[in-house]
Picture (cartoon, rainbow, N blue to C red):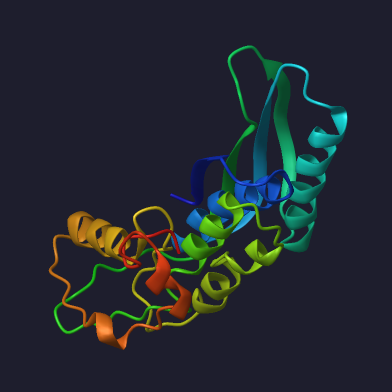
Length: 204
């Protein structure tokens, strides 16, 4: 009851962003459970024939984020495998539980922090050949850590795959509540209008 653990795979993003997302996906999930991320186990799995420089880019990026947030990368594995076509990074983050989640009640408010749909727009631009280091703003971790100490916050949920709608559904399902939200009140990034998907269901 004093340790929070989260595991997450990262794949399909540009090489320079892979270590960043591997760290933040897992650390953010620990923080959302009101945990302070402290340790991480990382696995870097690469296609056969991958240049050593690619390994260095991934490892240095993940390590830089770990140092930034005071997380110790204490174990892991690196290998090349037949059958892998693109790099895959897994991260298991451990943290110290600071306080428990409190069950939501009727009348509680939902606060959506930040712009909706930005990550989906960035992914589309990258898939079209654009080069951008804008991915660094697509982590909820600083906001989550800032909100952990607020006594009015009952629970936290990051928005990633499945978008805002997916996150709200998971909260509803886990806590057996009904959530009513007016999408017109959300701060949706203007470029999201060009997406081929509903920005409320897109990565964010």
